[in-house]
Length: 505
Image 1 (cartoon, rainbow, N blue to C red):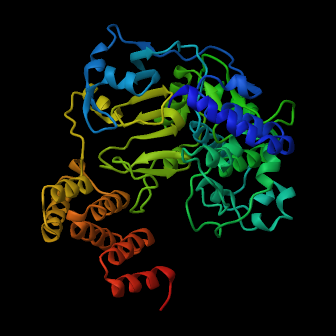
Image 2: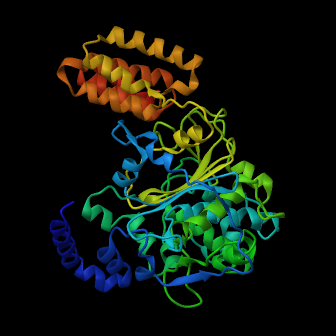
């Protein structure tokens, strides 16, 4: 974006929000002033609560010869093209990239002024850190059960109807039912979004207590910071310690951290509340030490820091068919960690993920840890390509079945030919699961794209029919297909689908 235009829009927004600023105080100012914070400027925005290191740090070994060949590995970029990793790193605005295998640093690069001592925001990687503390608190009996109502630990919310029936598990699964609006790139929407409010709030507990219910708890997954921040409030009350102190005493000292870390606070003072959804800051190698903890099932240097059962539950795929995020590797959310569904369980990797490209990636199969710090949301997934390369194994990126259907239609394939190709490709996928991927969102996107092209309308309808057949209980697929039938004038079938979607007889 042109910086002059961007600043002008911010100034305009600031003027428009003058009255709101007077009412809402510093929260609104923070939103307008910073809007999209960088990964290294958190100290300038928020007061910090330190997590102090103590004792000797755990030192990774170093490869006698740094693996500069990693720069030449061809990885897939976000446009689908293959590029050398060094080019990918520059294009994706990486700030740090560290590859560790068998406790040996093979590759460590920093960019744009970052060094091995730069403390950087992890954004939503903080959620995985919060999950670590929850597993420990459960093991210690400070939280008795994930099925406890959160009002057991935050009694001041018991008088608010919206919080009735919400459990610790609902927060962990992001199924609290509270209303939430995410940013979408439009200035006014972003300034007034839940994402901005909870990230920049100057009174976290007041903001969280003001939520209202949209769904029944436990019924729908929606990714939201407020659930993870409520969980931080639960942890503080249940343990009688700040989140920073819990991390310092129970984790940071046990993993042999090299540097201190910090949490962003909503306001200064002993009653300041940590942003347990997106406010944890540390160095790249200390993030690697956290990842190493999960690589070794919660054990670090002879100490069981996190219960092994909690680590396993956080990093094992659940038996549900659709991912929470339908990228090609298909991300499933478990205890605030992400598990790629594509080619699981042959691949058993997992990772913590944060905005602007922060990732803590763990591949137990090859005993590899990769830490990526960046400043760009547009990222692909080069990690599997790198781990296979280091293990001397071939790796082929999977082909997207929705994209192959789109290409066929563009070449003139009829609706019947698209259906036949789908049957062929899904049969091929059953024989070669690592070679192909398919997801509902991709099918709907391709179907709608073809529907918008006059020459390919019938192929678009066919793709949406295939999507609905593949996910017969999905409201999204049914709604998209109903729209397609209306588009081609088939009002009878459209009405039937609309009635089913609305739950009518």
